[in-house]
Image 1 (cartoon, rainbow, N blue to C red):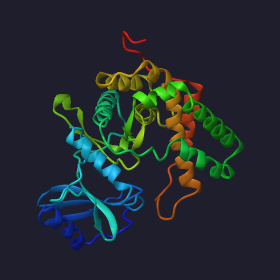
Image 2 (cartoon, helix red, strand yellow; image 1 turned 60 degrees about the horizontal axis):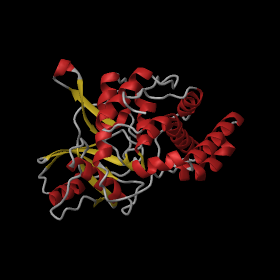
Image 3 (tube, one colour; image 1 turned 60 degrees about the vertical axis):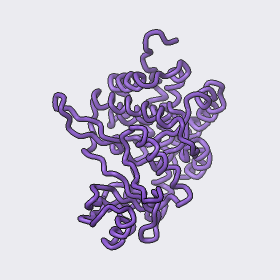
Length: 332
């Protein structure tokens, strides 16, 4: 179970008293998650998730928590953190930084179709637009500077073929980041991104229309940072719109995802041209992090490392078969 710090009912009740949320009914550890301690918490005031932060520091956390608060206030379906009478949303429980957020309804869709991809795409675009005026800044901590630092540490653990691919792709991404088109994205299509919006970080519940599921929220923003919005799109395409066994892109789902995104925020011509390169960047990011977690694990941080070979396959597919999203009529 991903409960690294045991929380007593008395400790949970002390937080509820501060938040004026009444009496604790149930406190139940959540088995999912690999970074933090999480509990379902039910009380007079409603149903929440209590998170104790095992890795992020008190100094780092305001970016993430205030971002979710900012997005919630602008109508984006995210688990808003609860505030005390003074407006504070970061607390201490059992000696760890902690927050209490709304519990989203529903469950995960692990085999998404076009309908689900359209909802995620449109909501992601609204999220990007809602974050434009967010005043805090933090870089994507798993972006290119982290790859530069981490890849040399991984090389002794890799096969000849893996080393050739990872060094070649790092050089390619360095060249991309130094290019004028990429600078255009940074200038005009840049802001807070989720950066980890996989299928298990989105919730759906059954809806009334034809019995289809309705998206109820995005959560787990603890890899968020400021990056190009196109990177966020690429992360989603590489998870929501692929055949998991092979890593191949499902072009029907991918086209639907991008088209739905563009109903809220049309991509520029430069974004369309750079999408194949960003799909490679998104695959590189998760291949490097999974290799890191496998070969250089932090003590007690992971229950089981994800197989890095999945994103190696995805990266090889994106290199071999660059994908361009269909362009809306009238765009050049």
